[in-house]
Image 1 (tube, rainbow, N blue to C red):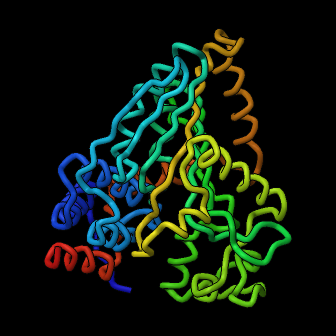
Image 2: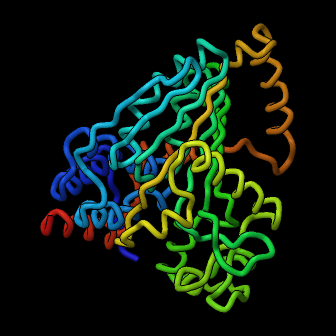
Length: 338
């Protein structure tokens, strides 16, 4: 399949131009471009330019306000609330991040509830800066029903990703980002686009039968939770944290209220930040945890989550980022018809 090589800066500008042609203002376009270009930089193609058709569709339908201005409120000493006012999540997250960091440093632990946002990206770009600031961080969000609860026949949960970040002093933080589904839906969509099979246990077809056909999973089928009932209960927990705590839609309600234009529904996100210097081992927590991580990374076959992402980041800085020609062409078309 034909591809071209682009720099991170070129992808960033391509996204800005595409979004600006379809109704995004400067602040929203730049925040979203940072998220998308970083996904491409780190080898996360399923959350990079691949998502542009959904972003553009939601702008054109009017579902998303491309000029929204998020508002940040510290509703208690340890809780921050950010209202995205129907805009995309990246700008709301950027506007609320410092308030979350400050609240965690003041109190030892803090939470941030994001409401009225449209989330369509990976979580690690949101968690990594908080871990770089020296805090432990977690993030959770939902989507529309795509995952069948253990023992059921119909999807109820979103793919419901969770992300965890651990600071490592002057080293890049440990950050993992994973769906509670057996595979992220974006990865299944790429497999369907490219005609690749997915592992058995990823999902079921429209009749509820196990299949390795990615297209059947997308077309009327559903994903399965990882680890059976264990992944299912984690997906349930995320629904309650994201929607139950914030008052935003559960995944099934997001489906009912969405216009199905291909872009992300309106919803929420929940984040936690913890200051390790305020948790009882201020003098030794970093050295103590680094001993554990050294033991883990020294085991044959084991690795530290995020290492591949950092390796991709370094490699792409030197050799450029491979972008499918068809993906690039679709962005160009969006600019011409915006």
